[in-house]
Amino acid sequence: MTGSEFCYLHNPAIDKDAKRAAQSKGGKGNRAGVTQPLPAIKLTQPRDVVSLLQDVINGVRSGEIDLKAANCLGCLAGHLSKALELSDLEERVIGLEKTLAQHK
Figure 1 (cartoon, rainbow, N blue to C red):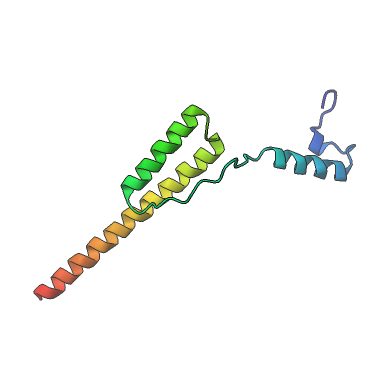
Figure 2 (cartoon, rainbow, N blue to C red):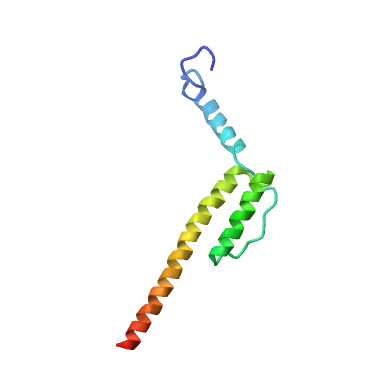
């Protein structure tokens, strides 16, 4: 706000209802809308996650995927990769434990 030491939301001269309305409008306008829902995909192997990331990267490069959505997908893909890795490790440990138990 020109000539004021306060921004709009901290200016004591601005009505609280007006501030609330501005915050609500700003928040709604900042959301990336989904134009077309995509079908679910099966992500059970690390190669599935690699394929998803390739699609997301190409979608961002072509402008088809919003940067916020791509960032979210990247974060979730990282978590999924870690979960798949831990699941695989758990299966291997269980297999080793069974083998050890059989040799005792």
